[in-house]
Length: 134
Image 1 (cartoon, rainbow, N blue to C red):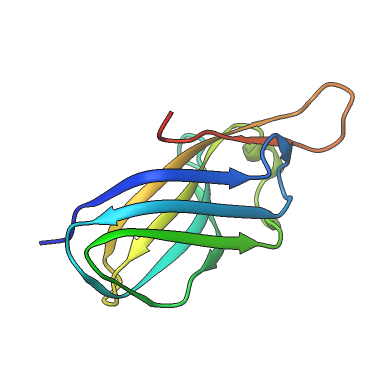
Image 2: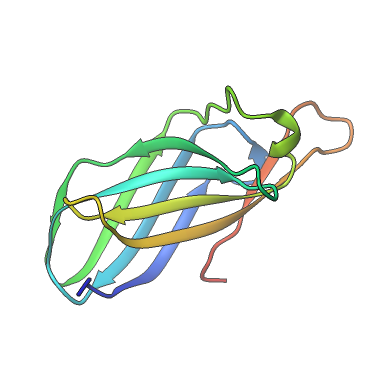
């Protein structure tokens, strides 16, 4: 049976900024079982009806987590949407933080709804990442 993971805090910065800007994701979670050799995979999912696309943003090194609370932080230099249909981007997407076991099984997925809009008078798209804790 997989460990139970509880999300205690999360912060994604910058926010209300251009869609492709760098991203710093910080979270604090608690596990009720030790986890050996796990990694975090960070992804952005563009989802429009049947045209779902996943953009891989980065992964952490493998880490061992003991029972208890743990911080996690990752910095993404930029989000590259090359190959993603631009009309699909101006919609709601999901920023995903997935804790993955050494065998590739997903232990937990933390989903952050991301509203993408075009602000009047500005070029490009703006992202607003919403906390799943609010």
